[in-house]
Structures are given as structure tokens and as C-alpha cells.
Length: 412
Image (cartoon, rainbow, N blue to C red):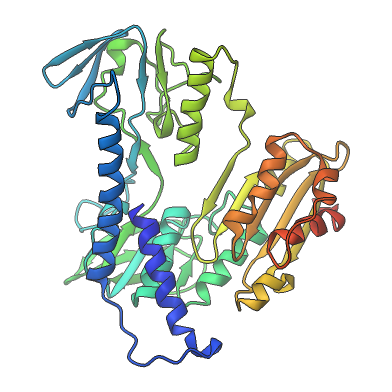
């Protein structure tokens, strides 16, 4: 919540600067990071306190604060208090990963938690990592007024996406003055007086970048280090994620793992669906599984990226014969009217079964419009259902049936 609240402040600042394009003339535009940070903290605090109050008021629920550790498959110790139960559910979340970069112990660095606590705008923020967390903070701070450089080890940003989506995201960020350095194969950190120098071995550009702040945004790790999993017979993988089956059951009978700590989804919506699966199976006699879940997520840059199902590359790797349709946002009326024509819409389907395999909408409203496709995928509907839908004009979603009509065989 604090990140998304700060993103809202960054968008407000961005639109204010663009005011003259829309006939809105305002002088002396200024940004106060202290006000934006205070608002983010208040929004988060309100949500946390309301949730805690709701839990504390629930009948037959005991709310405890403390460090919990498993001491057996049926026993949890919270500080000095021992709790026993036949069923235990683990949902301990995760935290920012700190990679073994040369010089990491010699310089101050920030993670996502540190970033939302800043009360001032960095002079020059260097973001190590070109995926979701790093890109959201990079754009946000650039709009707040910071100079920003992104350093990514891979040859493109958000490498899990298709290359056309990755390239569109890069162009959008560079269009706002963010420097993007990809193929940074040998990253190292050193002090340079009061500043921080980041060494990179890229295909082009200066070999050293010097900034005032460094954000490490290179993935997450689960909070399973001091959980007593061995005492309960709960297995973890090489990265510390708790191993679960398709119904979220761990290797220990009577113990389930939900949310980010199981490595089967790193989002709030997937964590909540984990709960829905477990509750439906245990309480309602259902047989819900993770395999029933259509993968979906969003990147909250501006414009946002909404993703559902497989990418074109993933579809091809899975043995599908993919049909692909792409439409630039410059050919979407809603985007043109709002002066936000950055991005594209992309649909992927199976040529033989006519089933929707996946979609990406990188553009204005993409995080909402993607649900028109996601809901049909969840309902098991074919391309025909989307083809004959009648969306409202003028919206981003109105082009979804057109995407179906423009499907062609993709290039291998």
C-alpha cells in the first residue's frame, strides 16, 4: 500500500507538469516529499489498524504478537507461550533479497521498505534490478525530481515478458529521462566520497555510475529462516521456500503454507487465493488446486502492465501453435483522448483449440482492462466468447474483440 500510494503522488505530479497540453496552466509547481510520505504512511496505518481491529473483534479468535516457531508438527511457540493444534497454517511472507554483490558490505543501500520511508528525494537514485519493484520506484522517484539510472543484469527489462512488451516498457521509462543500462554482467559497489559508485560491465555506456542512493531490487526471499521448520518436518527448497503440493499441503501432515513463503505466487491476490483453496477444501469439501488458477499480475508503472496467462514465448515453449494479435495503444481511442498513447495490447491463443492462452495490456487502464480476458480464461471460455462481446465505447476494453479478429500466426 505505501508504494502504490506514492505512485499515485508521482502520477499527480506528472499530470501537473503536463497541464499545459490540456489547457491547464499552473505556475510554481513544487513537490513536497514529506507530505507525500506522510500520506503513504497514514494510508498504510489506517489499513493495518482496521484489519487488526477486525481480527481482534472476531469471535473465538485470539490475536497474538510475537516471534512464532514450530517445535513439532502440532506445536507452535510464540515467545514463551506454547500453542498446540492439529492444523497449522503458515503465511509468513517474504522480504527483499540481498545479493552477494562485491562491495555490498561497504556501502549503504536501500530496499523496498527503506524506499517508502524516505522523507526526501534522492539526488541520483541507482536501481539495481530491472523488474517490478525496481521499475516502480525508478519511475516514481524520477517524477519526484530525482535523476535515475536502472542497472539490469539481463539483456532487457522484466525479462519474463515478451521482448515487445519489455521494449515498450523501456521506451516509456527512457522517455521520462530514466537511463537504462542492461546486460550489466559484473555489478560491484564502492564508496566515492559521500556518494556510491556502481561498476557495471555493459555492452555500451560508461563502466561506472555514481549516485547518491542505491536501491537493491533483485527479488524476494521467504521469511523461513527462524521458523523451526526442521522440528516440524517441513521441507524447503534451495531458496528457502516451503515445498507445497497442489493443495498447499507441506511435507508435514496437518501443516499448510500460504502466500509468498511457498514460492507459488508473490502477490496479495495469489496469497488470498491460497486461503480460498485451503478453506474450500477443508471446510466445504471441495477439491480446489493451484492448477486451476490462471496466472495474473500487474506492473504498476504508469502506464501499468496487466498480464494474464502465458506470454507468447511461454506458449511456444509449452508446445502450443500460437496465434498472436498486437495493437499499439496509439490506435486505441481512449488512449488518444487522454494523451497517453504509450504501450500496446497483445493477445495469444492456441491455433488448434481456439483457447485463449494469455494476454498483456501495457497502456492506460491496462491493469483493469486485462480482467476482460482474465475472467473469460477463468471461466474456460473460448475466443468466440471474446469475439462477440460488446464492450463499452470509448474504453480500452472495447478493442479486445478486435484483437481476436486480428489474430495471426506468431513468428517463431
